[in-house]
Image (cartoon, rainbow, N blue to C red; front, side, top):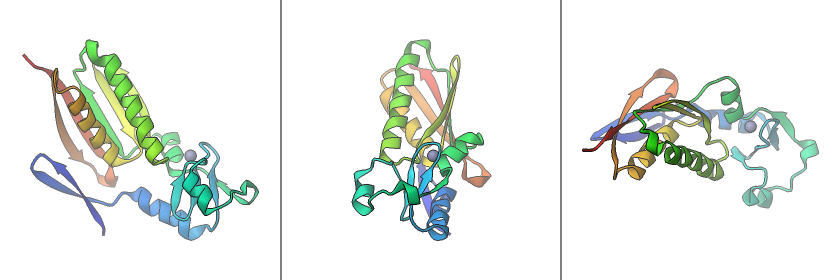
Length: 180
Ligand SMILES: [Zn+2]
């Protein structure tokens, strides 16, 4: 089985390749031609999910939507079933940084989705100082945690820990600790 590595402190955790890759390949094997997601409009073609307006896609194929098959893409399907591959829990978020953190999380999600239409933040749950952010891709939670740590390092320390679960869900915990 293919593995991917995540560096956590000095430890390297081996993870199985994420299931969505094989899901993408399944689409590629079972269906030739173009598949459209009925919810978000993402296009599956040649084993990749694309933004419908992607220039690279249009260079490969002239879009004829009449011939396209319709489905729900993995990311929309995950959101609809309240599933996720990455979860970032952020504790002790000081009131004074909540607006900035909110903007950072939204911007991070937007940038990730621009890069890969299937990489998405599914939900941001805020209960005062405790936030829970779920993502369609397990590495996204780690990357977001690192971004938060990097962005707030002048004012806070963010401790990141991973707990691996079956089914390739990556749970990351970040805690704000106000520096003296
Ligand atoms: Zn979709």
